Length: 74
Image 1 (tube, rainbow, N blue to C red):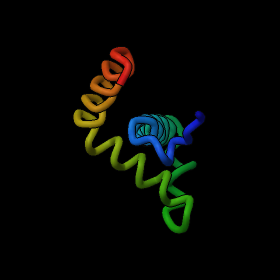
Image 2 (cartoon, rainbow, N blue to C red; image 1 turned 30 degrees about the horizontal axis):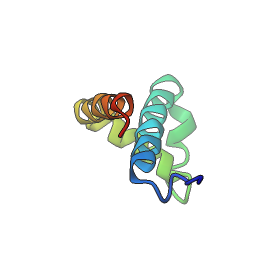
Image 3 (cartoon, helix red, strand yellow; image 1 turned 60 degrees about the vertical axis):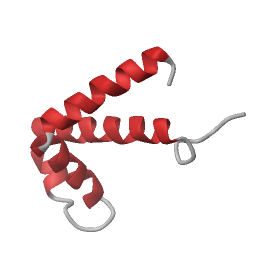
Image 4 (cartoon, rainbow, N blue to C red; image 1 turned 135 degrees about the horizontal axis):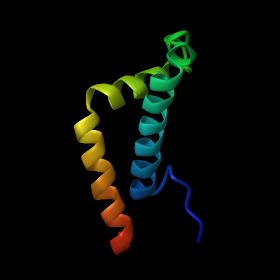
């Protein structure tokens, strides 16, 4: 049975972590790409980039824990 990331908590956490890390990286390389879209639905990516920048130790720990959980099969 195929589940989407919306119905599987572990998959949803993985998707959110990947989005957060990707947005933070994109903002560090090309800041004007995300800074011009602070309002509306595109503002979600700017907010994820801010979370990735400000909470980077916590995001890094969450990525490590998620990696071990994937390796162990959770």
